[in-house]
Length: 429
Image 1 (cartoon, helix red, strand yellow):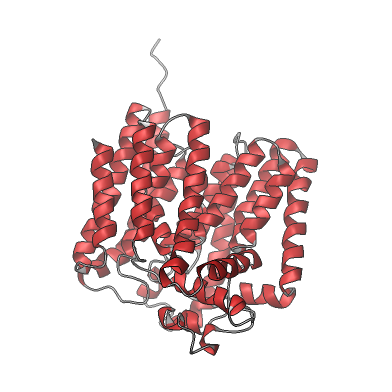
Image 2 (cartoon, one colour):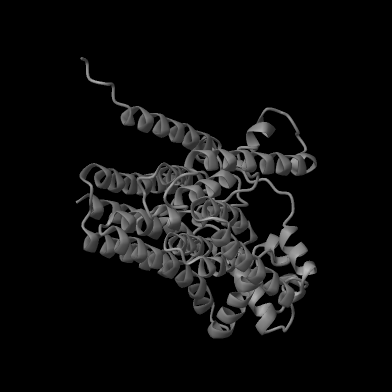
């Protein structure tokens, strides 16, 4: 019954998201997250969920997410325009901005910021954008479906792999019934594809297929360069677990494929464009708390300092994760924890960034990093009920300010509770 109720709540959230007041939308989002949490709580208590029912619910929700026009972010149209720059206008999105083509029928769908920006994505995703644009032609619906279906297939494929390894519906429910994942699918974001490649590499490392794991990791990096962080952590785990030769196999393959692809795409000039995404701060970032205290009222002037502070914090938190899960039998908790370290620390974070770690977390949702990323992703989703670029008001402004800090508090509470439940006093003698 709880699976059916959760499915109904998430479907209602997806279907009514743009037709109701923002406060009502917040309520629907909270109910969808609560329903998902109830499913996972039942799974954790009972030790299993009916696999077929989870698949049915998940596929229904994925279908609704794909059929629905994007609810929040309009990034999907920047993907389309960057692809059309290649296939229609025969130029490079690393050198030419979409605004260069004012007569393109898709330019008006692209947000103003992306209209005047060059592509921040790697050459593999540029090829995907171009291929999707070529296949979809001038159809608005087909162009958005290319990216929404790609995101849906990415997360469903990993759910299938995890389900076959685990033998129950827990991983399926964790991934396919997640409002966080459904929001990424609906927006057509490439982050679940990145996460699926990272998770696939983790599975390959567990099977000691190190060279192929390096190729898959490189594919993730060639979509979004931030995948280098979990890739580096995974290589360290291979070195710790299987020795320097195995780690060299992963690292050398990763490096060679990445360098070769960027060389073909334009070399260092293209890499500099990808890296130079600008110093920005999102409204749900913890660094906004610094601004709220009155320190650095001119956010533009301090954004670079915040980026430096974020980088230092990423390194510190990733180091703590290495210390905690260094001896784990799988790189999965380390990889998920490294993604979470970035999400917590970086000044510019969006809800769909959770897609980098969610597919790997589905390998064992009971692991602490998996639980943490689900909680943090839920906080980000609540913080962005009002789409990026639109200032939240009323109750949404309050939730936007407190959702992420509150999620961190919940993460600490969960960690402490698990530590206490794992401790048992010795019997009296």
